[in-house]
Image (tube, rainbow, N blue to C red; front, top):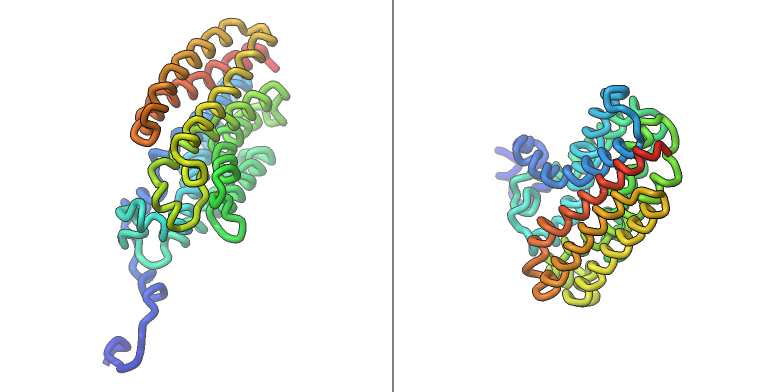
Length: 309
């Protein structure tokens, strides 16, 4: 007689299920490769802004890209999906965990294992790279996991994500290439683009308003309504870029100021169209306006490299 055949004996599925290993394709889906690009792009902007020739430290360059994308960003996705599994059951039931394709508690186990692996990858990058990885991982767990769960408030949660998607990878790229603390100019530009990314994160919240309201997650669209949140997102994306333009003028990078200025002008036109139907057009804006935003990051990086600061 098996345990299941014994009367009155109830099996704990959360204990039994992990004995079945998850499919590797499901594991990859959990880590969401499509999200890695943003962190890798910011890391490369940091690398470019350092002014150090790529060939001089190519092993650190490759390892840093792996750390920023598949490792740290992948960890953040696994952590978020595990602690958001009840919300996803409402908003996106086809995801690996709520759909049951990721068995038992394997979503949590993968998040823990990938956190440890990320730290191992960061070790060869020296104290600055390792420290940045520790900070990003703490922010990733703090964003999704109790007791902090920053994502419960759209202001704090989006700030944490924006910092870890833009500022921390940019800092890491510059620090690893120079093997030193980046210059003040680099830190300022990275910080401004991190602030602007808060608006991009808000646009990503439009798709989950109903689930957020049911669960009690106070994303900005849930708090303020979709239209007000969209207006605030546009303002947050615009002001830091205007600041970057002014700094580029002050640092005598007129070509960079001009290119970013044109990019921002086009974004403002696109924002006007976004605000007509913000919820429906948020994905469209991410494919257009956000693309111009990140191209401006690269322009700024080349300007900083030319300065040699």
